[in-house]
Image (cartoon, rainbow, N blue to C red; front, side, top):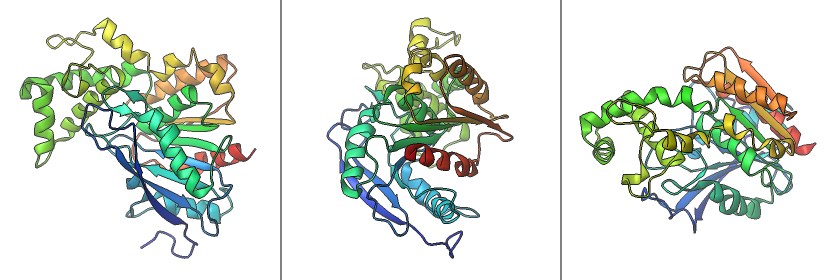
Length: 335
């Protein structure tokens, strides 16, 4: 049952990419990855701009094409926006970037794997060669939460690949969104005895608590921003185990990946984009709005063109915001 059965539906194509690089991870995650590609009704892909959906933590690209109760999945949203004339026809790729630690920040990590490299090489090459979409000047990435973080960092580090990006409620101002989670992670380690015991117990199930999911996220962030080649799954925390005091040299490794910090070095790359969209809910429960305000203030000071919007909502169930950013990205690519 589609949300709008009277609107012409695009076509979903499934590709499997046998990556030659993703096997380089400490998690034991598979290198073969599926990508679902949306092509709008009446098109085959040739010449269309390409948008790449980077999903949030605990999700995978395939989740965005699943049926959704009382609402639209992303392909149905695209069908409606194109039908209404709000969104020019675009191809959209939904790559599976899920990991053993529950998600992805879409950067290269010795523990998690070379995800940025995969997305900007093997994934794009597979999609664009088959459908004739995208190409130089006609690619954009977008995402919410961890996906918003990934989109923002890709805009900074890979502006030679992406020409536009949208960061929806992306992780930033790490001392506000990550440090508050450290005491809970330490309590989890105290209960389980080690990170390995925690993870194996989490995977064994048969169920997990909401607090355990947050602890897993903290461990995933540690494996992403500051992987330890000698630790289980590369995980080490940037705080002392007894007093939860910040270990300055380890925390500095995290901060080097904070978009608010990175903006100081990458304003030039951001200026080269055709479009940059940043937004956050004004009552985001992970404190991300404060980081978004800091980032946009820096971008204004550096004369980086961008759109910044705050909206009256929190971090949850905000897919409706795509109605604004997706047309913005498509039109920017076509400009």
